[in-house]
Image (cartoon, rainbow, N blue to C red):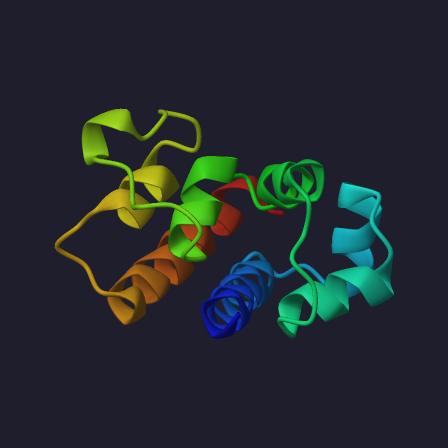
Length: 122
């Protein structure tokens, strides 16, 4: 079905963008998720629809909820702000803010993460 291809592409692009913003290599993401590099690459390119187990592992590696990941990937309707779990605090709030577009979210997340890295020395 054509809609499935679009959703897989959208999900894959979102996962890649989040992985890059988290400064994770594909190899490191594979280690964190216990999913092969090749399979993660195929997911990011929209060639495969990951299982719920794989989506949860990816979300955990990216420090976000699986529901938010699926919503941004076009698999679920975006949850209302009141339903977004508090896990991740500031990052979750940025991701859930309906007044921000994707570019604004990305910019805010990069700035926030750069401040956090500066404080933790990570």
